Length: 193
Image (tube, rainbow, N blue to C red; front, top):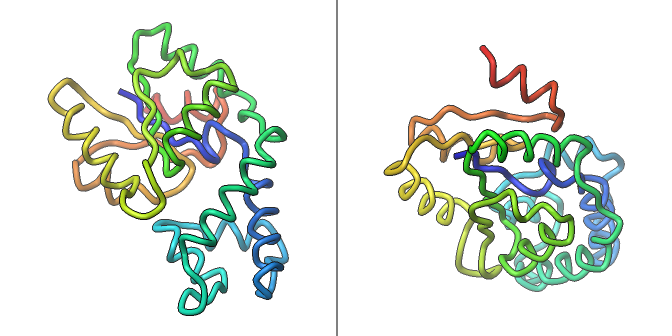
């Protein structure tokens, strides 16, 4: 199995996420991020911790309200988001090689499935796994559920753009591919020792 992350790995949505965060920061009277590098360096999971680090006062405002506001803005801006340049050719390569692929993402399930389908790549995946709600389920728990199932069948190699799932994959003693950018050349170098 190859376990892909969606946002920032297959989908090139870094700029949109940066813009949305700054819109929310302005709305909530919090200083905006001056540059995208600050966003990259601060971003992480769980999202509630990221919001706190970004400057939201979660004692005064509910995390769930900010998360829903973020989600609504993301939905509004999603039409401008493209796949990373080599996404489809890489997915096609592994699909043609008979490698099972899936997405595990912190996105909401319904939205994730819709977004993947809109980009016309849903047929490359055996499974598309997103969190079901903003309150109760984390991507780590859903990822663990899949890994436990997949370990019975074969190997799992997670591919993402952040070290967020490093702990999860190390827990299971798995190799991983950490992508700073998704390109066929980058992936080939990382797959071949």
